[in-house]
Length: 132
Image: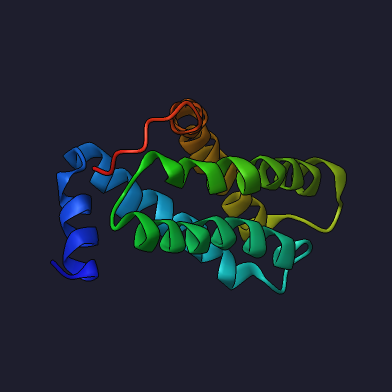
């Protein structure tokens, strides 16, 4: 089977709610960080938000599908991202308007993701290496 077919098949085996979350919420909200690069802390926000997605592309290739290993880049990059967003929203006077609203959405979405990612990362580190 080809790599693309393996990855797509793996994605289709995810529960429908997970597919909707990943493809309709998580990825679009994080990829939107590329639009805010010119804002205060925008390059950092974009690097951390999109960086986790990019690393997961590598994980999907190596694992030939979706696996619990995909939680690791989220934990490593999005925990500091949430701290950076908190600082941007609470510690800076030059963050407001639509950018601040986007940061709140990104904060909520990635915090929800981390709620699931931390246990998934622990399971992967504990030896659960199957793909979906």
